[in-house]
Image 1 (tube, rainbow, N blue to C red):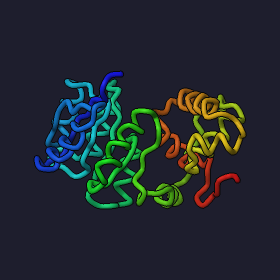
Image 2: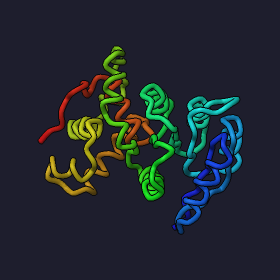
Image 3: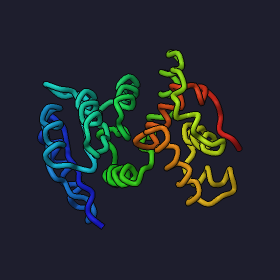
Image 4: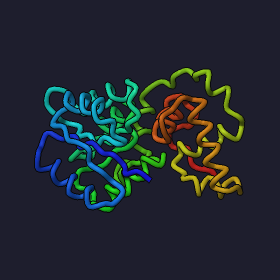
Length: 223
């Protein structure tokens, strides 16, 4: 199995060096490059084709959210994980809407950083513990629900239920317990949901479900 290719983007050289040291200690992770701002990041993604971009939010020339939007709007297969020093709701939501696959604080423990990168590559959602579902709910609550895209009508009843449970924060294992099926079956449902809705990953499915009103703020998961 090939190593996970990571691009580290931060305007502080010391921060980049720290992340590089942590990641290069792992047998299945390779740091393929660094960038000091969003402009460099966009160019580096085109040149290096990383699997994961660890992207700082606040940077000169082009900030991380704008850079993520450019990267994800192109044909790059990279997934972007946003990094910040502070737990700021507005940046969280903007990053997720830009298409980011996850969000971590810069002081995340090394083992959680590595685990997070592996989770994103495998298609799992990645939100720091302090960045919970309430953040998405809080922002969406102040916005009118967008019209349901045509892809929603293509979902089967079970696929729509799976989407709703994903949005409510359930893992594949928890969804499998709800429906009394195998995790493999749930993974198949998740893959079909993402394909039909043309979504990149589970995080984007969560944003989609709340913005379209499929899940309401404060709604609780099924037992």
